[in-house]
Length: 428
Image (cartoon, rainbow, N blue to C red; front, side, top):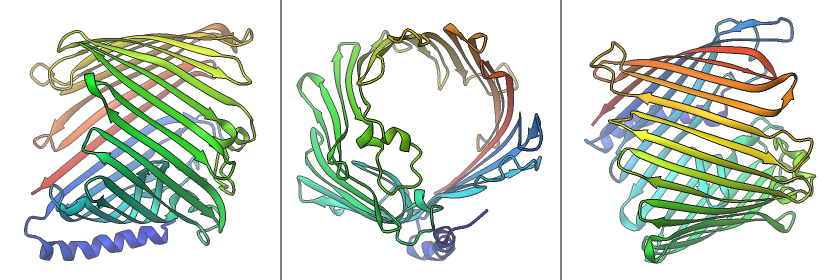
């Protein structure tokens, strides 16, 4: 596993922080979580068929400092993997990664917040992982500003990191919590060449009669055209909530990312296709336990045929996290050579079994798809997942055993097993 410079810097910062935090504050809080996952399944490799693959994963998360108050804190999350069967199934894949590791400082005055290190940025048009700095805060009573800069994590393994950079920000105007509109910008450079340059506008408004409106639009500075429009209106009518929504994508402007060599959608970027998707979701809160609903969504393509999806759903909420539910939907296309299908899903989770059984919780999920036309001689697909678990050490340790089974036109059958052990420690 290759450890990047920023990964080493994150580990060093953590070691330094362990020495700094006790001196910084007597109210240091620590939260630690470890998830150990062991899986088993069969796959074909370049040299063998139906070989057993036995990967083990370890996810570690650490948060330390002043976590529930303003001040200094440190946050770390990463994973590693080992293939115990050693059949080279993961030979060309990353064996571990630091997902985030950053120092954070916040204060109540002007809602000032500073983050330094590997982190995720969600600022208008930005949805990126970066190695760098982010700063945000209020500018008076009606404006807020956030700025960030550094290196994009997504280009880490593409021609090295020399000349790679990302920076941008978002300026927002707001009136309390009733209204906010923001303008954002993002520029990514790959080997000093522009990989992506986007402008965006987003807004949220809470209107009279409990109406609320959310939306965003993204403009591609390289292609000089709009890449995406997305809007949603929420209309409460007593116990019923209606959510009409609208989206429009221009493939050439949405997927075109200049010199971004890691973009997996280059073929779509060369297409002049445009997609308009619109529809409405309806949810009826019958009582404290039951929720019924329906969805209708329509897909209008500029060059391809249209499609539409209709779904009915129901769910029941019991004590704690106990829940049962199901949905049935049908997707149809205008293409005479296309394949319409009906999807049925049933799921359940019971979190109150300790009084009657040795296990504490049980989960089940089944999906069945029926195709109007056969695919490789098959007219249906099946996916089934079952899981059960128990908690130990005053609920600090959770052990879960689960298994998945699927069969579809592309797999005669596929079985997977997994053991998950989750441990959490919190100290005030």
